[in-house]
Length: 345
Ligand SMILES: Cc1cc2nc3c(=O)[nH]c(=O)nc-3n(C[C@H](O)[C@H](O)[C@H](O)COP(=O)(O)OP(=O)(O)OC[C@H]3O[C@@H](n4cnc5c(N)ncnc54)[C@H](O)[C@@H]3O)c2cc1C
Image (cartoon, rainbow, N blue to C red; front, top):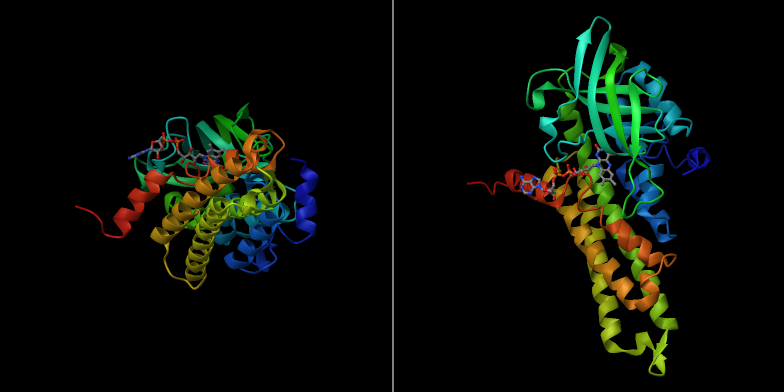
């Protein structure tokens, strides 16, 4: 992913949508950023591209919400201007689902924190100029977690590996090492011990965004399948002339529509100030079920062509597989929803 693409996207005003103008954004809200994402997916943008280009969407919100002018000037403004790339590092080799158990430590030493640990699966981490990192500044459990901005070039901070993946090929994914990294206290985001709450709050938007990825690539795959079945002839007639093919396209359409409408409704409730933590989990799940089904059917309707590298539906099919895992896996989000909706013993 060329850095120039971040600059170009910023110049078009795309990176700043959904961030207030007071922090260098373009204004607007979640519904506006959804409109941009949908338009890009409609034109064939991959889920990997959107994850890489818009990593700012998960790296910055905590900094922007902190109201800390120094952090906003050093990281938020230049990132929204396309000059810096940021990542969010929560997941560790020991596990990603149980955020409250992270082991990366940050020990206070005068005007610095000394950070030790490892993070893995970090989107854009290979290219990142700074990483909003979840660290343990206190005791066990969620109350001991803080967010700290660790910068490229700080002694002891290393990109240990660039991880190869099934899909999302244009989006780099890093394993990051922290060995006695001295990070100024000024890089603490919000209050010490508030990291878990900040992460949980921003996860709502990340899950809605991943729902948009899911139905976005599903809608695009459906459009490609519809067009292919009009062109491709078997047994002397276009594929779409078979009722079974048309019904399949309608079923794909139905699932995309349901996912899009529900996600829009949840996003609108979030923008209106309602707490939609459980509903964001349900939206992600609904959209992922749609993308798993639709992207698979789109490959099937393309026959052998659908299995070939270079056929667009093949790329969406591979990209779709990350969506039930990243940003909270289906199992973990279902359990969270069960608690929030009162389905407990
Ligand atoms: C391409 C990619 C990009 C990513 N980007 C980022 C990023 O930018 N920043 C970041 O911090 N993380 C990132 N992640 C990490 C991602 O959020 C985690 O992979 C995810 O949260 C799952 O954690 P895990 O992989 O450790 O799986 P585990 O937590 O080990 O879980 C393994 C499996 O067990 C299931 N499971 C776990 N606990 C339970 C339970 N109690 N009951 C039932 N089932 C359970 C899970 O659902 C999963 O299916 C990324 C991952 C990938 C692959």
